[in-house]
Amino acid sequence: MASVVGICNSALVKLGATRIISLTEGSKNANLCDEQYEKVRDDLLRSHAWNFAIARRKLARLADAPTFGFDYVFQLPTDFLRVVSVHDDESATGGIAYKIEGRTLLSNATDIYLRYIRQVTDPNDMDALFRETLAWAVASDLAIPITQSSTTREQMRDGLDDHLSKAKSIDAIEDFPETEPDPAWVSERF
Image (spheres, helix red, strand yellow):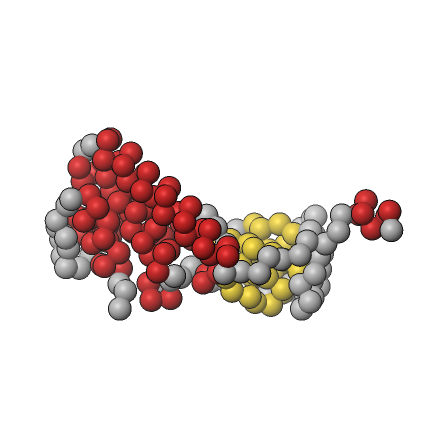
């Protein structure tokens, strides 16, 4: 079973640092992992439309209307990290105008169907390649505080870049490409 401590220990091993037993044990390495892990995880989740992190939801429209610019305001899910696509019907074809402001989405559409990147907190729900890439990201983030070496940080960044590229590539292969609607100039010609 994968765990946050396991991911952090993988990062610490890459740095040649002492492993931890828990994030709350009070050691320097545990405190650094506890402080940085969630930020690094969410940043990595936002960086790509990871298949395991995509969720779909019909948003709830709020009673209050925006003061100007749009007709309706919708509540974003509590685990929302970033938009993948926004549609006004279940067929999910074509895009609509919208704006994210705070924890809400503004639009002129009466219904909103949202595909989004969700905050995945359980490492067992993450893809194995993502977990390893996350360990490299944590190692890169902790390299200076733990080793005081910019050379080590560069090595961790190189490892992160390699693993991130591989993880994104494989993630993309496992997903059927979405068809984009034809631009207006194409439909006008035919």
